[in-house]
Amino acid sequence: MSSLEQMYQQVILDHAKRPHGRGLVEVPVDPAPDRRSGESHQVNPTCGDEITLRVDVQGDGAGATVAGVSWEGQGCSISQASASVMTELVTGHDLADVAHLDAVFHDLMASRGKGLDDDEALDALGDASAFTGVSQYPARIKCALLGWAALKDSLARSGALS
Image 1: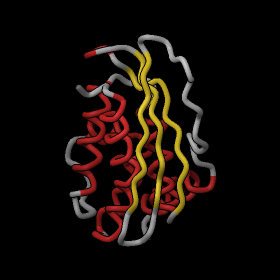
Image 2: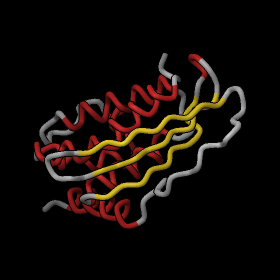
Image 3: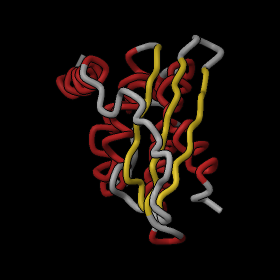
Image 4: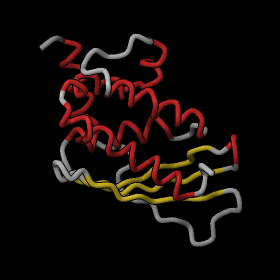
């Protein structure tokens, strides 16, 4: 195993052991007029990984921003680490940036371990680039994408994507 693969593996293990965003944050009973939230529960039937994710969106239209992401889940280190990395990556970004990051991560997962030729896109992924090796294993790709699916569904349920 190369030193880069070892580093990537360590990033995944660190996020799995100390996940960012774990612990569902309660939705305010009377949120501010420019705030909305959505929740999604996703299951990977292939392996049994599960995640419940809540997103807090501030603002409207093109200026809407992901103000917070919280989640609770169980499953393999890949699914849990991916949710942690995604939480860190998208919080504070506007919905256009989040959609771009989602597309780039999906491209990475489709790379079959080759990574991305676009260094700028790879840099934008930050710690999520550690999942390059995961893309070699089709059964594990669904694990890495579970949190992203929950985020996209939560955003839709919040009404922020309409």
